[in-house]
Image (cartoon, rainbow, N blue to C red; front, side, top):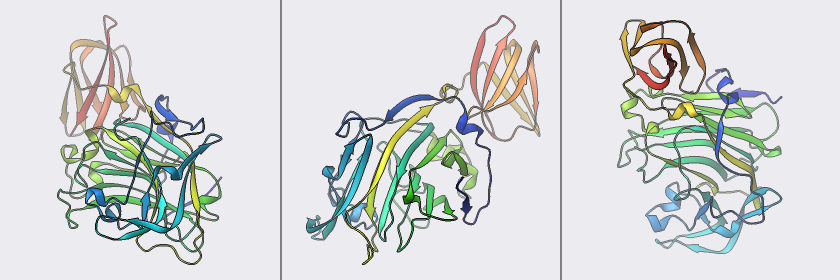
Length: 353
């Protein structure tokens, strides 16, 4: 098993959430010999058509659809040198081409498990990414979720990162905030073989995994500038997927090999039926110090309480009461399933502040 060295933060989590029962709602295994345009589109050009210099990051490549190929169950995004280049709206020339595939205007969602199995690449200046943005969102106030980003260097791509960005609009560097991690391989490169990069995303938590090992998690309370769920951008709107291979502003060097590519085995999105439960008036919650009291307008026989990602944490049976006390529940979002004495089952989402 690959050993991971966590940069700055040494945290070890259970992967129970990863292995829970999920329902597949969208996927692409890249069968066939062309990219499925019912699942993906392309961003093309330099970004200057949107007023973005180098797609907003000073990237040196332009995107074109023909740099994406599908064969033998693998989608390949290739980066190439382009001697003639492409001139942007301001007269700057990009001398590298690549591709960005996106589900924008085709498929979007909120919450669940999102994963891709990808083989990346070594080389100074290469910047592969697997990430999410909100539909019709403004950056960074509406958020950005980076599931995987890697930056090549002279030697091996031995680290992978992820991040959740927030901030104010219009963009202000002083209010741009993000929580991120870097995971280093103790030997070898992420480009040596395929790896699975994923998140489990709920209303109040984003958790990152590499090869099914939980690496990092973020909540609204991870940010000093965000006091509550009310200003956490990751619990609203619908979001779409992007995978791209960019060239950083610092660019390649003499050791960088062209052409080069990343390979994508699959992309999948799952949801747990519990994450789609809405709040309702069947269950009322009163919080007093360390005790939460759940009150119902019907007598409760059986009760099960889950975390938002589906982990069972409380199970009570044969209660026959309209008021149930639960000790030491932390602030957050929970899912409760109650069965009344007549056998009716009701699911509710509850928030403890």
